[in-house]
Image (cartoon, rainbow, N blue to C red; front, side, top):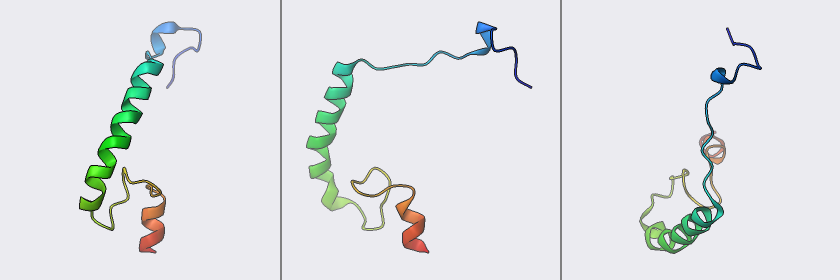
Length: 61
């Protein structure tokens, strides 16, 4: 059962990264992905460009 909406102790804090760390993460990903993309199995869908947890079951079906 959930508590009262106006009781702040019922809410958990949300951690948001600053814009600079998001940009840095994207730069690292873009540079590292090209190094490991050839080593990924063709059926790998997680963390792969153009594929997702939705495309994997569709491929199986």
